Amino acid sequence: MGTIIRTQLPIRILLCGLGVWGRNWLENIRKNKNYDLAGVVESDQATLDQVRMTGLIDNSKCFSDIVQAIKLTRPDAVAVIVAPDRHGDIVRIALENNIHILSEKPLARDIDEAREFIQLHKLYPNVRFIINQNYRGRDCITLIKNIIDEGGIGEIGYFIYNHQQTVKIPGYRLEMPSPVLDDMSIHHFDLMRYLTNQDFEKIYAVENVVPWSWFQGKPMFNSLINMTGGVTGVYCACWAAEGKIGDWNGNIQIYGSRGCLELTDDSKVILHEKHGVNEDLLGTYQSGHEITQVAIENLELQYTLENFKNALMEGAPCETDIEDNIKSFMAVLMAKESIKQKCPVLITSLNIPFLSD
Image (cartoon, rainbow, N blue to C red; front, side, top):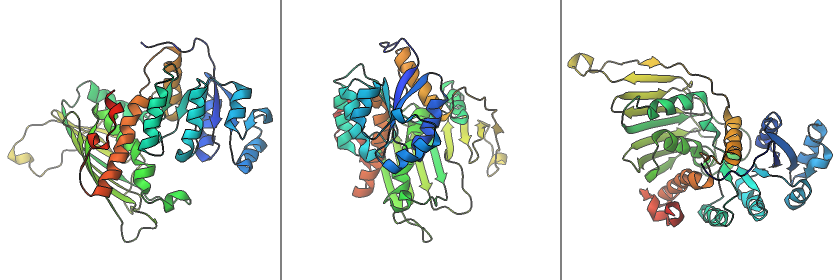
């Protein structure tokens, strides 16, 4: 149990960013009784006016400047839902004002800014700095996590992670140099850490283009992964897939000493139990059986909001605070460096000593 930061609810939160995802946050904050919307900050006047017209937010709570918004609303926390290259504009001001931070992924625009955030956060030890990783807040992921932690497949040896999508959403994704790596893989890398209970040690990554791709960049990304506890893995992701595609979770197969857990492309959890080996079974498919999922109380963003609330009210550790989430973010940077160098990259080679502080 850590230091209790707050003793009263609701938590007054200032929402920064009203893009598509920001409006999703707005909806989730409004329906959570533990939070009170202190105000919203949006630098684009047209977007701010559009939200004003909905009648969901009083004019007195709408701001275009973060400093003015903090001065007038005196929030307990800020939700950082702006573009990654603008996170620092809000994070620095929030820390300087001892305001708690709940930020969208990715943590920062690059390794230098991530290093800055870590060092700056140490100056404000009572400020909670949490990163949203909402994929953890899904029924299927919770089920897999519980089975693994209870020893259901024994000691984990390796995993195969496959993510195939046909992404033709108009906008910036079609112009990104590395759309999968920059916009999606942080979710999957975080789940690799979460489910295996290990961190990244080494990554060997390559990017490719398929002939029919509609992306300006490279939409296919493959990697070989080594984790700190000896688990190894293969990750294959493509956003220009045609034919067989799956949901955003991807298809995950985790192999242990007592069997295999699989998350299928339609989010079913299948347990393939260990069986006797003889010549009659060679070359035959063992289908396994589906495990019934139990609905968790808080899904997706509500899962993150609940963790954030507990971190403030109970002094409870938060799963994805900055000191933990930096380890998922670094996996993205390791992959980028591996693609650039065309060789495997160790996390120690990135010279980030704060990970072991």
